[in-house]
Structures are given as structure tokens and as C-alpha cells.
Image 1 (tube, helix red, strand yellow):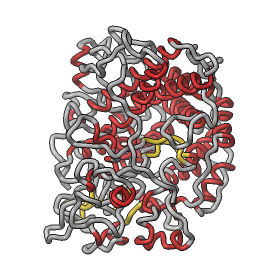
Image 2: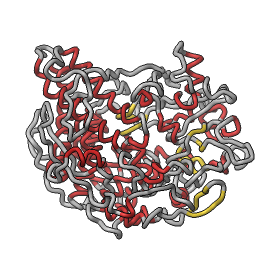
Image 3: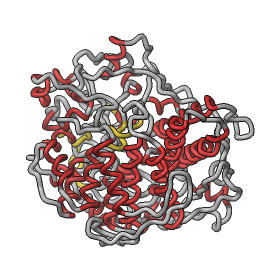
Image 4: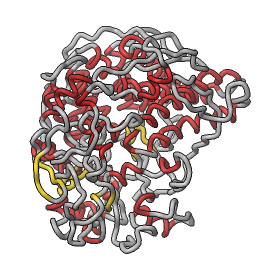
Length: 616
């Protein structure tokens, strides 16, 4: 097994950014500002570290993160959790249960944008003579992160306040995502791609790389052309060049052929490679756990174990460190709370049998949210090894009533769980005391470090597997989808051990669904394949509506899912998949010319607001 270190990543929240104006957020983000900070190149590097730390601020609540929210909103996952988890249910039904449901996501988005702008506009305050490559790498990373935060924000909310200056103007009105924001996002990823060099940073150290920028450039470009320009099958469509704003690293309009070229550069020169066995991407194959898990006995016999955090396929990720605490603002974002949320539903079945202990080894307990929708299980052929590698059929694999039970509090639980994100245990775990070394990470921490238990609770805090935001298989599939060629898709299929197919739009859509299931990518794939204003008949609306009637367990009894107010297709048609802009921000702006609510939301929209959990 690749040696795994539980250590703090650099995240210096006290270092300077300018505060956004009140209409972007009502809080000042830092004590420092552009009048006194940064004062040196060393300060600028600290500010870059703080910029990356914003991703962990999102993570303090998974229901504020881009990946988990999009996963729940897709047709492949349910909100699930307990009967009182109205927030996750609302998200899964494309509704809200409270005005502040996405306040932290909005806040973190603008913290990130402010910090990125601060780095970009301060970079040449210092003399970089003889260190031009270092300067360009730092600037490229800042452009990458600004593009990332605008991509997340615009895919969440569409037209949002936007600025590309050292400080936000006052006022800072909504900009058109299609006409203004996306060209800037693409420009940021182009700048990042052209300024950074392959090998400038150590793979997996948490920094953006040239190849990651090239991959994200394609992701943003394909969403822009598919969703906003309604181009459908990108391999055969005529795609107009995109005019980009002028900035360092941008040399002119962006063409499809250039995007393909960036993808090919990332694939062939980025230094990444597919992990040889799909299962080795996921932490249940770690050296402490795999010997206890019969499903991976063949890997153990061959001496093959988890590829580890920062492995050869990971191109960009969120990293975590052993200093999370419930007692300080945002620091729970430094443990992988997504794992906790995706664990087997805690509580018991009314007869004293609980999930997540020795009988369910190697899968630990948690909140039971983001469960897999039964239709994904049914649609996916058993002959594809990725199905069992991705989805835990808990009643079958753990033995219903012994290793797994449907609890008296469960909701929207079909018994299918996301193995990619679940908490993992091992035989050396402390089953009777979840506060000590309950997860395999906790066992590793005790055996290999002097670090104290991060927050006094291993069950809630000993989770350190990366959240993979971009991996090489995704980049390869994007190349096949843009070019209409099967070469790279076939390599992904060969790694998975499934028959290789010729390119077709249907084949590439299926391949993306199977390869990337449970990683938070499916929802925006559906949106871009449907096009803006697709209505109830579009691919996304119909796929989401297929959740209606799927089997779920509610408080220990089997029933079927139904929409809490109207239908998934109606909610998608009304919103185009965009979230509610936090109402507090609308109130702060107090001017619809500055900021107005997205269609399909508001107190007057009857099927947008969930007052209580759905009862099945």
C-alpha cells in the first residue's frame, strides 16, 4: 500500500483577502485587506494556501458541497438519511426546506473568488527575476481556482454577481452566465493551462496542475456548449469558437480543436495513468481492510492494495487533515464528512440490531444519506465489474438482519450504498467505543502516528480519503465524447474489464454513467445533454422523473418513492437544475437589477418548499 500520512494540509485562514461587498455576503472574511496584505512573496504563497483551504470550508457541511449536492440531485442517488433529514430530502426533490439552505456554499464561493483575485492582482507586486516559472505556476494556480469557484457557483445558481478585479465593485450585479461568466471561466482555465508546466508540483500534493486545468477547461467548455448553446452530441455538432476576455495566458478565441488538444496534452504528457484495477481507486482495498473483505480476496492474494490518496489517476482532489473539531468554525471541513454522511444508517431496527459494527465489516455507520437509487442498480448489468465495485447491496452482501438492517428512522433507503464514499473499518477497529479507533484510518492513526484523535470521536472524525474531483478516466471519456473516437473510451473499458464498444452518443453517455457513478458528475452531464430550457420532455427531466415509483424502505417497511409536492420533471423544468439563490442575499441587494431570484424558487412557488420530510 502506498504510505499514507495523516497530516495537516496548509490552510491559513487568517491570511488576507479583501472582503466582498455586503451584497455578496454580510460577513467580512479576514482581518487583513489589500491595503496591508500581501507585503511579500512569502505572504502571497500563504494566501495561495488559504485559497485552497476554502475547499475545506465547503466540506464542513457536505450538503453545501458541489459534489454531494449534485450527486443527490441526480437520478442515481436519493437524499435518504433519517426521517428528520429534511434538508437532504429537499435537495433530492429539487426543493428547499429553509431559506438558508445554501448560505455556506454561497459564502465559500465568494471567499474563494475574493482570495483568487487577491493573488492574481498582487502577483506582480514583487520581483520574480530568475523565478519566472515559480511566478507563472503560482499565478496559474490562482487562475485555476478562480475558474473553479465561478464554475461551481454558476452551475449551482446560473447568473450570479461576478467581478474580475482586485476588489469587488459596489454594487456588483448579476452577470449573464452564458455571455459573460462562462467566457471568463474558460479564459481562467486557458490561462492556467498555459502558465503552468507539467511536473511543476508533486502529483497529489493538493495543488492544481497543468493537466488538471486542461481537464477542467474541457469540463467547462462541454457544459457551455451543451447546456447554453444546446449543441446536443458534441462530436458531430458545429461548435463556434468562444471569444475570451483578454488576460495573461489567453491568446485569442477558443476552438473545439484547441480543447481537444489540451485534453490530449493532459492525457499523454500530464504524468497520470489509469490505476490498473478499478477497485484500487477506493479505500475499501486498503492494506488494513482488504484482508477482512472477501470481495477483494483476489487483490489480497496478488498483493495489490489501495492506490492511496494522490494516486496516479487522481488529477485534482479535496484533501483532509487530522485537526478537525466541532468546537471551531469550519474545521470539521478538514475531515471527510462526506464519508460520514454516506455511511450505513445509524440507529437500530427496533429490536436492538444496529448497522456499522463488526457484522457489517468493512463498512462503517453514518447518517445514511446519498444512498443509491434502485434504478441505477436495475439499469446496470451485473456483468460490469464496476457495479459491485461502486454499489454496496447491503442486504445481500452484509446479510439482512445480521450485518445490515433497515432502521426505524431510515428514509429513501433501498439498501444500496455508495462504496466510493462510505466510511471503512477493519478487524482491528474498536467496535465498542466509536470514540477511539473505529475506522481503519483511526487504527492507522493510532499505530503509525502520535496524533491525538482529531475531535475525540473516530466515528465522526477519522475520515481522510480524498474527495476526487477529477480523474484521468473522466478526461479520457471527455476526449471520446468531443472527438467521436473510441480509443480512450476503450482504454477505460479495458481497465474495467468490460467489452470495448465503438463510439456512439448512447455508448459514451452510458460509459460516463457507469464509470463515474456516485462521484457527483451525473447531474450536470444530464443538464448539458438536455440543453437550457429543455422542459419536462428533456433527457434530464425524464431521467429524474424515473425516480418516481422506485423501491425504497421507509422506517423498516418497503414502499415506493414519490415526489414530495409535484414531480421531478416539473421541478427540473421550472428551475433548469439551478438552485435557489440565498434569500438573504436578495434582501441585502434590495434591487432586482442587482440580484434577483432564479425561476422556480421563492415563497410563492408552492412546489419549491418542503415543510416536512416526505412520508412514503
